[in-house]
Image 1: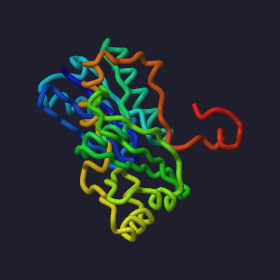
Image 2: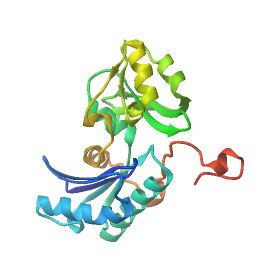
Image 3: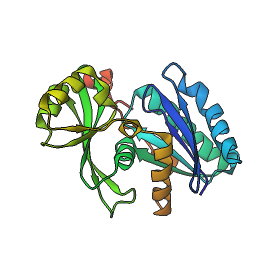
Length: 230
């Protein structure tokens, strides 16, 4: 199944093309605007595999957690590509993408930086019965110190929130936790493509209206009681 995927959940991002075992991924630096790089990046990735965006069968996009602007740009691009080409469309959880990248048979505690001293966190569990192979326990906003203090002994940790100096210091001070290093710590378009293919194989493609961003925290307007975040 020829698949293109988009990840704009972080300040950096990536797009990917996947065809069987062949993968081409283009990563963006934080200084590159997502909106200006998605189309060119996908054209580059698909060309590397010898086909074009229009030949894709499936479009996968990470629906979050992430920032307001980043997620809206990526999801809108995915919807537009799928609509224009009549392709299948799936939204994928960044928590599950990270879980699949880390792998193993134990829960993985994943943290995203939500700003203002908070993390957006969830535990991701291996689940053979789930379409993606992973099941996420909710997703909650907590203070950094609270999250680290409540982690079970020996917990495996992942997610971009671990890059925060305050998190790294508290994790190191405990001494009984297992933070993941390297690319598996972060979501990626290539990972989204693989999970998207599993969702599509299970018949779980979605209409564009069914894919909504999973934001890191409510908007200022919502927090102040002025209205919804979407």
